[in-house]
Amino acid sequence: MSITRDYKNILVINLMHIGDLMLVTPVLRTLRTNYPKARISLLADKKLADLVQYNRHIDECLLIDKKGRDDSLPSFIKYIWGIRKKKFDLVINLHRNERASAIAAFSGADRIVGYAKPGFALLFDQVLPNLKAVKHQIHSHFDVLEQTVGIDRIDDGGLEMWLPEAAVRSAAKIWQENFAPDKKVVAFNIGASWKTKRWIDTYFARCADELLAKGYGVAFFGGPMDTELVEDCIAQMKHRDSSDIKVFTGKVSLGELGALLKKCALFLTTDSGPMHVGVSQNVPVVTMFGASPVPGFYPYDARDVLIKTPEPCHPCGIHECPKQGADNMACMKKITVEIVMQYVWELLGKYEKLAGKMPREYGKYECRVIDMAKI
Image (cartoon, rainbow, N blue to C red; front, top):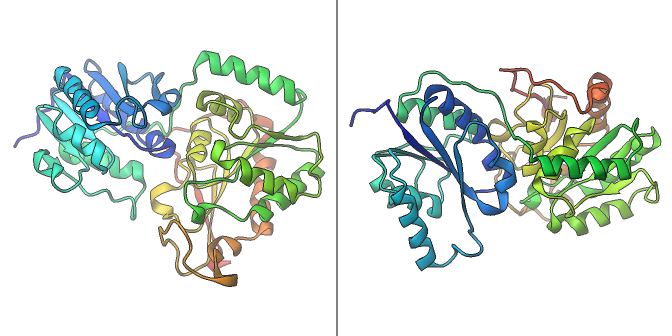
């Protein structure tokens, strides 16, 4: 089948988590550049609406309530019927899971492309493998645009998130109530969807103590599921009673998270959804990778630093470490506080004066990787 280039009504699908959705935003920009007159829609999980519903490159953000109204089979079929009524001429599916694959497959679009589960793939016009193990997820998405849609002009603006005005106002109030105007604040995100993505909480505690001793504020973020992790971390700190520790874990919306991170001087984080939100707000990032594949999910900004474990089992991609005793989570244990703080201090020295007004450098997205196996 020849590739049609004059698309008028385009749907992009990604129903996964925070990070996955943020990594779709360069695709939206590229589609708008190539199809300036087309109607471009994005289908996403309702609970993540703040991340994308104000995106300036789309005309409409369609939301599905995966854990609520649209969770049953009859309601899911009804939802797909609603998609069919919109008569898309191009559907691009950018996550290979069953729900997204089904929506794409039965969308009724003239052309259906992207990633797909077996079975549903039979109803796609063209399916590509997701090469996130060998190249950045964004670049694999660009392969879809180039090879299945015929786009030859990639407009990579990096990760983009426009903040709701209400969230910006709310974040400004939160900041004013918690930090002095001249306080430099380092954001911490210690949770992650996999246990194997989490750095050791004792190590985070030591980093926070070092920063507090030098007069920095420390702000803990994360979702409600991270509350206990943060409490345990703070309990191990020497300066646990410092008034410069602020805990926003489970207390702010995604829009407020973006607005608060934007004000921070640096973000010390695991490989997680909030890491990608921080990148979208141009906050310098220091992150630690154990189980995660570096090529696929590194923070997409050249100013950032990723510290890669020296363990030979990296990247296992396993959610829980199968090793026992002292070897359990060795990938994260061997990323030391000393090496992490070396780059925290380096980036603070370079960028802390630009907190809240860090410029975006178009085209400079490959972060610096520190391979501890070579140190």
